[in-house]
Image (cartoon, rainbow, N blue to C red; front, side, top):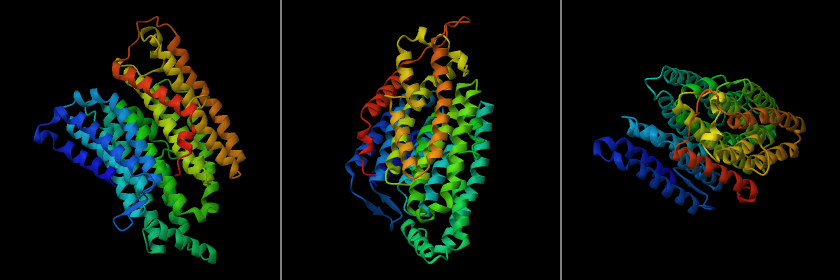
Length: 459
């Protein structure tokens, strides 16, 4: 709970930075506060404490995901300095980012549907503003508006589903809802409103994680938002969404698995294929990463479909591997945005102008593509293992096929980077971007060499 309080207070402090005139020390203060929040999360391991009349539960699952969110945010801070220092709205932007993180932590720790909705809206409303934070750029304004309209529409589905579940079970508490559904399933008289509520909640969450066919907003929003905000959306926000998705369905609707799992499996298959196939045709690296993010959502959906004893750890492992590698890739993309060209072809000459970068960039690409010995390989392995154990061999075959498609467009980044730029000298990476690419690649390698460090966690 201390972790959540510290992050929320940091957000309030950021709002007051202009009035109290401590903007110059705001970023160091945020980093120190996030490190303190991370320390409290680690110290609370195995505590399993509930707060606010069982509305929030900090167990190992929520503590692990909260720690991951904080670590990824700290990595994100390495390349975010320019976004804050060059903006007259630095304090406001910092506050919004911290409120997104506050909502994300709540989404990993809720044990009540009302608290889940509060966390989701804290995250979403702040993110709508951040997506449109580049006010001088038309694409950013369009991204913010499109994200707001589509997000609000999806939230309506989610809230209607929650209302139906409450109407039939008379409670928002996850454990009590699960108990009520279990009793009605055993008696064979589960109300139709429960099934309807599950479908509506599933639709709302599938939108939030950009799963097909609810993915149509993601490429435009990812492309239009400032690159640094896109990096935050694709990692921290997606991790929080999947943490909430798995927590809700594994706790509340586990007894209804036979009802929703087959539909979810089909959606996961479509998401993986659509994301990877459409990514092949993208000329913009930013849009390619958007479709890649959609494909990775499909892989993580497999763990929710499997819903067995290794699923929680598999989701965590995959979220960690994907977020770290993606953050390194977005460091490269930030350098492209600074150079004014986000096309894949603009990477020509990169290896010549940035000696040694191709080694670390290749490590990130290997992890994103799921090739050993990087973390992405073992993350996919445990996702696939869980699906096979639950009898979804066909879904695993689809996942393997889509992964092979993904190898093509990921390796295209490396091939283009190795080519000489005949039209100019190409762009260079600054120290922050260099540092993040190196750190992300080393973490990905460490998680790949020692995957047991994450998989042995009792989530």
